[in-house]
Amino acid sequence: MMASMENSPASSPIGPEHAVLKVQGLTVTLSGNGRRTRVVDGVDLAVRRGEVFALLGESGSGKSMTARAIMGLLDDGDVEAERMTLSGTDLLSLDAEQRRRLRGVTVSLVLQDALSALNPVLSIGDQIVDLIRAHRRVGRQVAEARAVELLTLVGIPTPDKRVYDYPHQFSGGQRQRILIAMAIALEPDLIIADEPTTALDVTVQAQILDLLLSLRDRLGMGILLITHDLGVVMEVADRVAIMRTGRVVEAGSADEVLTAPQHPYTRQLLNSMPRDVSAAADDDGSAPILDARGLERTFRSGSGRRAHRVAAVAGVDLQLRAGEILAIVGESGSGKSTLARMLVGLDRPDAGSLRYRDQEVTRGRLRDRRILRRGVQMVFQDPYMSLNPRMTVQQIIAEPLAATRTGTPSRRRERVAELLDLVGLTPEMGSRFPHQFSGGQRQRIGIARALALNPDVLVCDEPVSALDVSIRAQIIDLLCELRERLGMSIVFIAHDLSLVRHIADRVAVMYLGNMVEIGATEEVYRHPSHPYTRSLLSAIPPQTRAERGMLARRTPLSA
Image: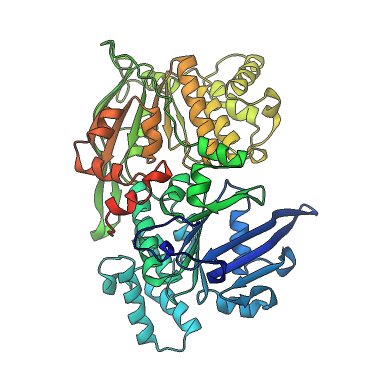
């Protein structure tokens, strides 16, 4: 029986005959390196009108390839199926041109990266108009009026003016809304949303989910939601299928699958939800290991008459105690990463001071700044971009040792082997290059590099946001284990508030360059004092199926 939702077309019983999409025995085989690899293997699924069907799984499980096969974006020779129908049309009997005509009219795709999906040299209005006129015989004036209507529908402010703007002039959340506007322009029967909220802040994510649900209710379309975010699935899914290595290992109503999973892999995914691993450091009254006072950093934006200065960090005070995990949360643009770069000495503040072990390091001698760089190390967000692709893992991890002339070459090799073992890799992996590792393994390599100089403090800038849920749990467990074994302090920067609650001793909230709230984690979560903190907390996706619907009710749809 399908899960119910208030005021939703999906709340009434819907039989298979109402399915807008039916897929049986879908197989996708791709060519590469002189061989054929099956990436989707015998997938069955059906999406009904008025429901959200979630396809859940980790990177490489075949979710996006399934979507591309349905959309007709793969070569015919790569796709086989026993049956694939869309609104009663047999997709297997259509040629490439006939499949193209269906895209946008019967089925639409919302991609993850809106900035890449939109044409940077055309205005938003032109892109919507071109889409409409490619499928409908209407004049430009009618299409332009429809473009304004669509932008209004998805919550873009002053749409009659913004329709002339270009993609770079919109925020990430607004660009995602524009993609959704284009997807519904011709009122298709099915929308395929491929990771539509992964790159968005928690509050923007809540708005996009609310928007998709409201459009589903208004237009009665089916939604195939592809994601690896369990919180999103907990919130919006009516039915769910779990994919692993190209196969659906479990499927059914979301209530059944998410509350009583049958397959071991499904249970493994659910067990990867954040759990409490924090162990608060005692405040013994000693001086903080890092003490920031009045830190400011301003950047210049624009040129000529449009030039102005932006305060990325505006007078922040922050103290980090020995052995604690301090989380810094806030949306993109709040100043978190700029503050992190100042804490590790990569950026120098325009004003204020930073003391490391009670020693001034911001405007002191070069020797003092070098002490900071040895004692405070950084783990970066993107494990793919932060490692030099032309260096072996041995060279990458040994680089800080070589740069500071620490140890002999043989001792450095020994130290690299020790670090690889410490982060759960084998010393033999030191001869490989970054591209030969998974995302989670690359992040472990980044952590090993950060530990090379035995730092007192790790500053982790969104270290798990690019990782799948189970790998994310492994990296979090590793960081907490290292804190316990090595006695390090950790500054953990994130916008995933549900994760932060389970690992941090204290949490600091940043908004527009200011630190608006700081305190013990449970105190901040249970009794937030600042309105911005309350808005962030209200947008946290549910952690259990029983909490479903709370996000949409408590987060108003806004631009």
